[in-house]
Length: 114
Image 1 (spheres, rainbow, N blue to C red):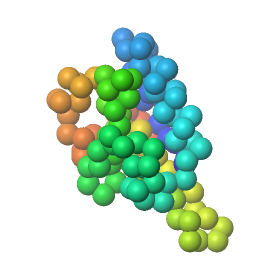
Image 2 (image 1 turned 45 degrees about the vertical axis):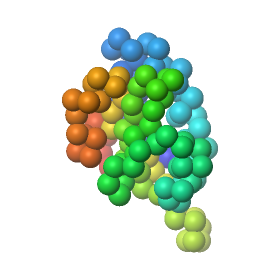
Image 3 (image 1 turned 30 degrees about the horizontal axis):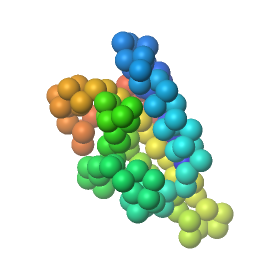
């Protein structure tokens, strides 16, 4: 998967959530290697992921201390050549911060989507 808006992750751990850095980096490294074609692929690795609408996923990271919201465009495996998927990072914050936002509407801090 191609991951966009990585600055959203680093901005958060630089803004007082230093303990989010390692789990966020681990998540990023795993997702870069993935080729999700649908929610089933996500569930195989991230059983606690919550799906919000048709294109948002909420991940619990850092021992369930943080919530990571992404927008996903799944890979299309049946095309030749296969069309790779894209993940747009929208939010990383504590559970308390997450409770104050609308996961389906949060836009993130930057980066245009193709």
